Amino acid sequence: MSPKLPELSLLETRVLGVLVEKQRTVPDTYPLTLNALAAGCSQKTSRDPVMSVTESDVRATIDHLRSLSLVVESSGERVMRYAHNIERVLDVPSQSVALLATLMLRGPQTVGELRINSDRLHRFADGSAVEGFLHELAGRNAGALVAELPRQSGARENRWVHLLSGVPSIAIASSVGPQSTVAGVVETTELAALKESVRRLEDELEALKRQVATLRQESGGNG
Image (cartoon, rainbow, N blue to C red; front, side, top):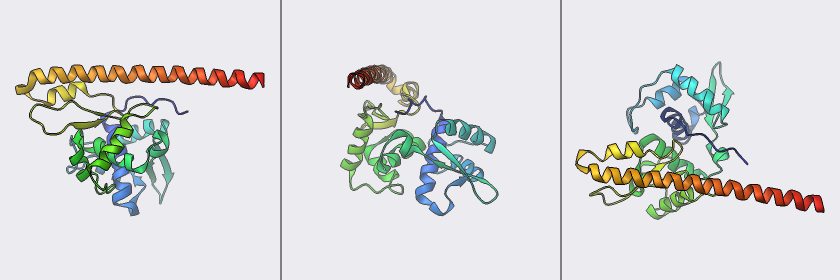
């Protein structure tokens, strides 16, 4: 069983999102060089928030992601190249990787926005298909990777957010704006409760797994 991943930083999720994006949109240049990866992280389009990072920033980030097996390094023509290893580490299908990458690159989005924005990474048949994979990611036994946020005042759809950096309750509360201060406080409370619920379920799951492992050992010893 893979150890539980620590919460990732914004740059770490940006690096992973860029690697997935470039793998599927410009496969001839993938795996990426450090220079190309830094450029992808600092890209002005299809990014929220927009960032400006140096190769040194990205190199340090890659070192940490490599220690988590989320990024693998290979030697190319005189330069090192980097590829993601998300599917294997998180044990999720390629469709789910496309959605996670879109959330990592563009922030919280509705099902409709995700379907449009992930189209170059994977073409989903309809919104229901997107929603199906989101619910699978939210209900994983190994721990939720996405969560559906409470609907904002005046919004027609709920937004979804990835949880690789934890539940961004403070960011969500500030994004509702000064006219929705009360709604922001309510959302923050609900998100905190969601995070606590996820942690409790993960603890219960780990305890159950330990019990099963103990029973298996006892059964093997008696056999």
